Length: 175
Image (cartoon, helix red, strand yellow):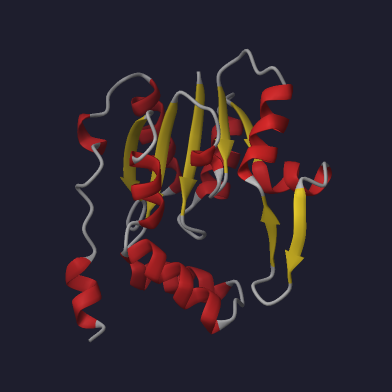
C-alpha cells in the first residue's frame, strides 16, 4: 500500500515521516528525492522553492517499482499515484508560528496560512479517486499523529473523515 502524506508546509509531515521511519515504515521524503534526482524545472528564488511537475515526480516514483508499504511525504504527494491520502492539517494561527520560526518571509507565511484556511490541499486530495483522511495536528504530538496514521492504514478511518476540520471561526477573526 502506498500512502500519500500531504498537507500545507508546517503541518508536521517531515517530523511525522521521520517517526514513521523509526517505527519501521518505509518512507520517501519527496523534497529530498526531487533534489537528488534533479526532478525540478527551476528554482523560484522569490518563494525559495523548487518548481516541480507532479507528472515528472509521479513517473520517478513509478519507476522505483515500490512493492512494500510506503509513505510518500510531501505537499505534492496527493498528486501522485497512491492508495490512500492522509492530509495533515493545522490551525492557521499555530501554522503561522511554525512557519515564522523557520524564518520564512511574511508573504510566504501568509500564502501558506491562507491555503490552509481555505482547505486547498484537502480539496485537491478529495478531488482524486482515492480514499482521503485528515488529521488535525494542531494540538497533537508527532507520536500521536503517527498513531493516527497507523490506525488509518489499518482501516480505522471514522475519526479522520474529510470535512470535520473547520478553520472558519479563526479566519473570521482576521477581519
